[in-house]
Image 1 (cartoon, helix red, strand yellow):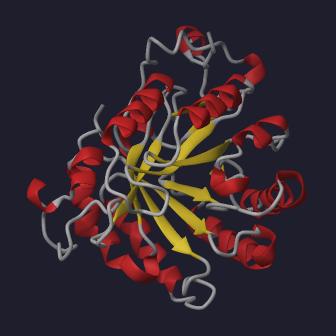
Image 2 (cartoon, helix red, strand yellow; image 1 turned 135 degrees about the vertical axis):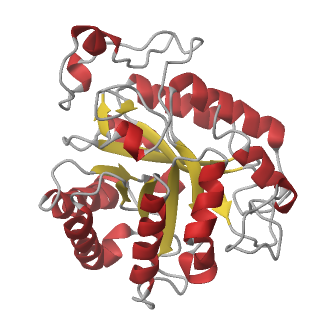
Length: 335
């Protein structure tokens, strides 16, 4: 059986919550017995840390984050309002991801989106949620293309939020048509260094080639840093058992994984909902104590959108205002 990593040994010895390495961390029990994890928000869990392959709270106890990702802030930034964040938290979410596209009319052509990010961070803080600042590369698939812009952006964000335990940095959403060794890893080294110069303990999420599915490449050559996790993205109508097997192999190799984006649709956001396959993925993540953000909190007329068209971001939501995708994802925040 594959093994995960659990902190029971550290808890029994009542050790302090200093970062540990995979080499010294005891193993989780069998995946058929889901790990005991804490949910709750920032007030309960404090600053997050990575121990072995497990995301943990400030006390070294395993923690799971479950919540939503926004769609592109340049299109649907209104759904990062304080009310929209409160609505999501009301259903049990303890994390929110701010998808700041770099291209597609995003940050590189609209620098003012930085203020949308800051407002979203403040809304998450008001609702006791963790919040992911996502450098959402997509059509600009090579992260090295805008390396200097990324370093400057994350340096500014880290200066601003270095004393804010809510904030998590996702430094490259979905690299594509690039290699891990040639482009993504050097980019991650440079941007991580820019963040670490301001905040030595920040939790940083790193993507991998092929739209953040090549976690096996990252597992073979990870960065020699602490408090890093590597993202995996999936869509239930497109990605199945082969990717779950790849994730298990990466976990076995000691790679910490965070599902910062997943949806119930096909990868293009359409094609209907694939709830049976999505349920397999949720069971898979639950059994391994893995954190996730569903795609996406918006009212776009597509299968993956969590809200029906026309729903207001500034009013409380009824279940009838959630789409089929939204009802399914929201119902799993408290699993």
